[in-house]
Length: 164
Image (cartoon, rainbow, N blue to C red):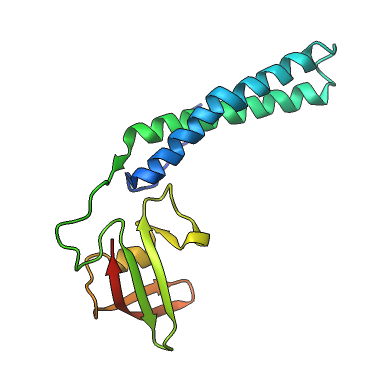
C-alpha cells in the first residue's frame, strides 16, 4: 500500500535572533528537563506491574512520544532557518522585522511587527511574513495605500509609520 502524498506547506524560513533563541531554549528544555522527567515517570510507572492497564505508564509513553516529536521538529526547523539580524538598507519601506503602523478607513490605527511564522504572537501584534496582511504590506512606504484580502472581504489601510 502506498503512503498518501503529503503536500508541503510553504513556510518562510526567516526568523529574528530573539525567535531563534526562543526555539533553541525550548529544544534545550525539552532535551535536558522535560524528557528526563518523562523518562523517570515512565520507568516508575513500569515498575508498578501490569503495563496494559497502567494509565500512568500509557500516558507517560504518550507524553514521551510527543516530546520526541517536538524535539525532532525543532531540530529540523532550527537547521533550516535563516536568522535576519540586521535592518534593511532602505528603512523607508516595509521588510521583514519592521514595526508597521496602519490606519483603516474608519480612522482606527493598528501596529504590527512582521516576523517569521515560528514567532507569530497575536498578543504582541507579531504577524507572520506569510500572512495576507504582511504580504500586502511588504515593500510599501509611509503614505502608501494597502488593500488586504480578508475572510470577510477586502480592507483598505494606509501605512502611517515604519520602524525597525
